[in-house]
Length: 378
Ligand code: DP6
Image (cartoon, rainbow, N blue to C red; front, side):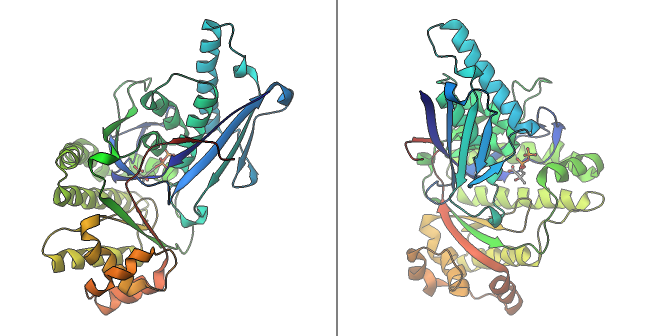
């Protein structure tokens, strides 16, 4: 017998950023964070986990996008260890269950988007890994319980176990048992949320988030203020904005929190710069769109790289999508509907237009979506 489970898991993009670890080993964050889960129709990892007595004598294995990949890393091992321990406990309670916890695992995982796009693929990757093995082992664990495990793979992964609007509560305990993800609101609560991703190619590979955030914690004084005074205010305001479906508030907090995070990166010693000239052109474009609309219809946010993620509501597609489509029609990735909005473009200044035209290599049009989904694919 080959025991098997497959799942897909989504990407999420934070609107209140996780940046900083209070315990790098357990991957415990210095602050809470909040994200929007993006639609798996556009961005997802598909993972299949199998185990079998016929694999006995072999090692656990992982194939990532068709290539044999390292499964021995401390983070992956932490996830496998915890999942096996939960299965072993189940087997001890029910002696009639097959002893899957002792069998070698084979994991096969693939993304439906290019890894080179520099999108946080580790979040979807670890969420799918944990969900697939939990399903294989028929663990009764809730998404929140699994988030404690996925967190040890990659912090942001704990938020990809839910759809919609998701908070990662930092917690206070040294053992990390209260550092977990919870759903703030399902996607259906505010389904009109859209995201336009401007993929910007970086000249050289930047500092990884894992290492960058530890440098920030160690050297930035500004960061102390972010953790103590900025994030708590942003978390409360963001949760209220989502509950009230208040886009202007959502957008203001999203942009301010991105600014605060990148200011802390600049305050890191030596400084870290993830945003580049093209990123800053995207910021100016969003400002111009909002000014022309006479209200806030778009919000930018940037992670540990130059890509811009622009949140907007479906009803404001015309001014937002129209402006970028008008400028970047020949860029790959537009959905057909984008054409219909191009007549409502905001005029951007020459420098901003040129930077975006030359620097944006791909467009991803997506929106808020659901959490992991069981599948028969693979
Ligand atoms: C800027 O989750 O990739 O995207 O826990 O070390 O794997 P590790 O870090 P990771 O950091 C994500 C940082 C961020 C902000 C966010 O997603 O909240």
